Length: 261
Image 1 (cartoon, rainbow, N blue to C red):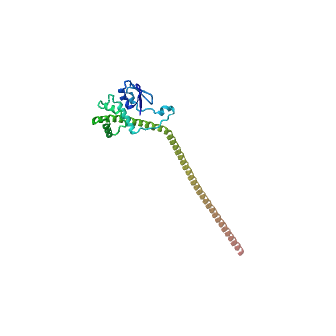
Image 2: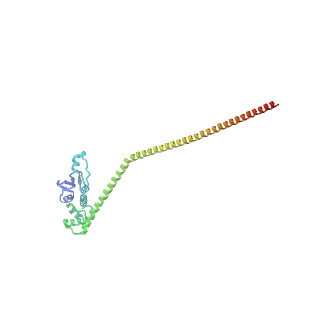
Image 3: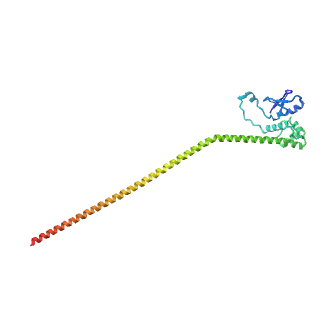
């Protein structure tokens, strides 16, 4: 919670006590935040909803911020204090301005409507349901506006984080895709080389088979030629032997005829 010091009387005040103190302190023209030492004039203090912690104030550049999230009740109480600080604004309904001023002294205001109504009835002795509903609607609008701002800020932060992550991941993805492409190219080259080797082996095998066939045909033809030449030689020898036998026979017959004569 933010605390202020009155510049007129140096009294320490909670944020929801500033307006009430200003009504009775004639010299309260400005208040100063206890933590950040910033002076706020008039109603400017209303926008000062959070401030630096004591550790951040004294540690300076050595301070490391710790993620601290407000509880739902703390966030609601801060909304209530903001609504109460706007009791004198022109856009605040005049019917609930005194009610908001009285609520500035209250703490731990319930954030559920049913409990809120009972709280005002018991604490402020307020039994006008119309005023209670107006007060609830006024505070709820401020709460909804803060939620929208928080959601938009979170969405913007998420968008920035996503864009940053994509920028960081882009070179890695590109490198991985290049490696995959190189692997695919290498595999394609290996498959192509394997196909070529297989084709060459097939061609060599077919060439060897054809050469063996040709050699077999040549050997067969040579053997046929040899057998043919051998048969011719045999037939010629037979002819020559028959001729010689015939000549011998004729000589014998001639000789025998001469002897008879």
